[in-house]
Image (tube, rainbow, N blue to C red; front, side, top):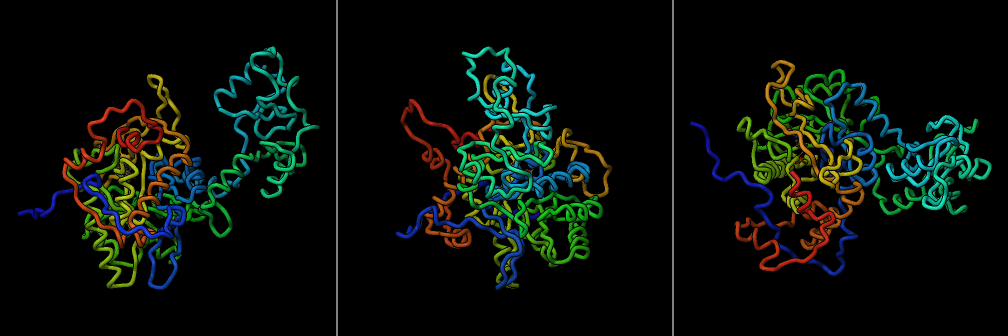
Length: 511
Ligand code: IMP
């Protein structure tokens, strides 16, 4: 007869943290959110850490180039999806690694002959107030001038007039020369009180733009995740089918972390893959395994010393219908508690600490906090990032509200059969394990993360913890009754208005 576990399969919303002593020298700005991603041997520093405990999901509708850059700039890491040809995944990794912080390629450009009316439209569509004017209208053309929204008055000037009559001509444009350091470029912006500095090559062609707002953003977010060569860090997903071809290319492109993207990582296929990567790329490369949901799965993946971190979660994702379709999975809290307990035992026995990633199903900021308290070293999220400006999908207006498409890797749309295949069955998806949906657009990644991380730090202060390790160690959780869930919201009051911007319920109710 089958074994029936004693406890019910539980979710994060069934738990609450009990406050502990907050000391006088504590405040949320001294809380350190750094977290290891590589296995930590006793008395050795981790080989790789993130500055905030957040990574983006290996998904087509989440981890593209722009999101990877934006997340690394905040101190987290994205996992560029592998449900695409090796060449295009490698190109995305390369673009993040070659992204020169502060030097951006111009995405809104025009020519001298364009009408002011068209410029107004371009500015409205893109939100850009500075537009380079090049000979051929391209981002790399010869720069003839710059037009900004201060060079004309939309409701006073004749909008049939041409850009050439209103722009600041090249002779008067303060610019930098290709090869200039970011520090020098920022000094020029400061000295000349400019918002934007075009960078030109020797022939006068535009190569990039430097914005004052990026400098300000950088000063406000000093946690950027950089490698030893000061390049942004990026992770890349891999699968158990083509790792022999994919991994060498990704490592060569500079991927900092490799992460198996599999709905079920408790397999001999994954173990073979981890072994092959270690044999061929040595001890330095960082490898994530999973997903698993039990202590037994953990034991299996650490039975050989190859894996660095392990992802926990099956069936909890916002777009996931695996539990419904196949009857496998586990409530995310039960899965994490089971695996974290095993991880801690393994650490006491061997001195080897395996970081855990709680993957999927996080419906609000509170649940991120609970996951970190229960033993996750960091969390992986899909929907959270799909809702930001930087996710790779187009904004769509539905009934006056802005949305972004978000679809699971197990949909016919994503065709990620490698994530779900057991390694033997045919190369096509027989049934879907995910849905194709829309999520509301909530703003830029930096804005949304700022609120989330502020809440995480603030809760850690309630527990008296200055680091995530202290937080896990000191956390005391209690199960909640249905009545106390009701009590947690407002009770018996009528609210006339409430600023709902970035409320957790906004991303909680979106799925
Ligand atoms: P979310 O943060 O709740 O949106 O969950 C994202 C996670 O769901 C991913 O990191 C994957 O582990 C998982 N996932 C992605 N696509 C699918 C799918 O189609 N079916 C089931 N799970 C999925």
